[in-house]
Image 1 (tube, one colour):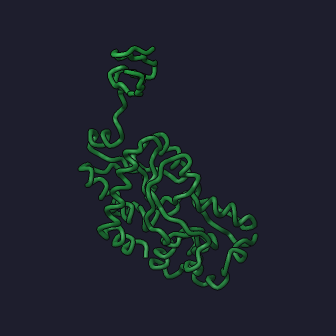
Image 2 (cartoon, rainbow, N blue to C red):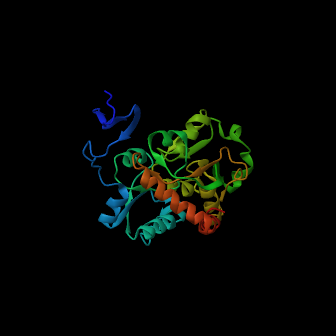
Image 3 (cartoon, rainbow, N blue to C red):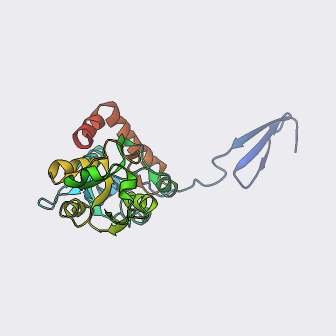
Length: 277
């Protein structure tokens, strides 16, 4: 369709138009051709309207997110990060209890906006959910907690991977996965309450707890009956991240922006030094 001195417009169903004049063809996106697409409100708008940000947490992980049984308050670096994020949005925190076995399903079901409880960044989580930029880089790794009197017995995985060694793990998280992958000969004992396992180790109910370096360091300080002989040479290295459901890039960008600002002004380094070193 070509005509000298005239503008001829051909339309397609996708809202594009070919505009020809004097043999010159331009392709334009005509916004008025199709109605504007209405989108649902994003998570940031929902949080602002609700007046709270829902934070999923297990509350069983010192020094990340631990619910103090005496006060009922959440303590740790993730509790502080949660407060900072809430303050940046001008809203209150609504904690939503979750567990390690249900963390992924609860996140994907939208039971909370974000999850913070010492959540390891890994490929499996990144494939199915959204994870923020890292924090605590180089500070996390799998190690063991044992009785102080047994510390010299355990010099590596081979000393733990024996039928007579009782290894206690909490279900559903990376501790359980690590144990099943690397301690096939050990006697694995699954115990639901992660925060109670160190005491059970100290009392002789099991020999070894698979845990993170930062958690092991805390319990060694609290209880002289315990030791973490391999803490300086962890079996793995990883970082933590803030977990959320996929599908809201704007919200993920905002969470990453908050972390970037905290990293830039030194707040993140101060919190890491306070809780993770």
